[in-house]
Length: 141
Image 1: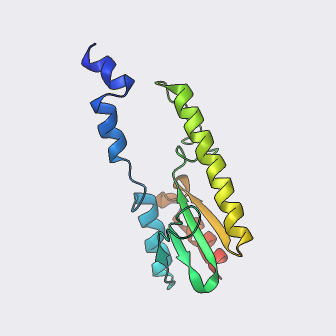
Image 2: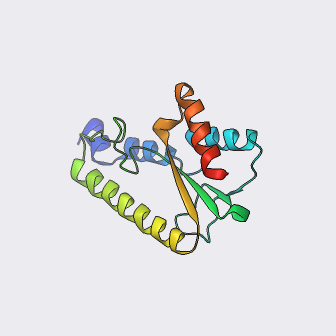
């Protein structure tokens, strides 16, 4: 088996790439955190006792913000709609499970009295920051 075919099948190269994917402190999350902090709001990070381990939690307001990657959480934008070429069946199933899990977490949080906002990775570029700031401000009021 060649190195190239081994990497496609899940060998060391693919493992290194997947290990580099972070679940906390991602670039989109840091953008949202800086915006919210700059607006004067204070929050807690990654509360493990809440369903879905939310990115930003505003306990006094009973509000939660998730910052989701478009690809990993099946968003309908161009980035989220990309289809992997290698191991496509696995990735479709994986993303489908993520979407299902996200829906369950959302329902559990709302049932517990939390208001939830999802910010998508595609909403965080500099060209869209004003709209993102308005969205966050409107939600947190």
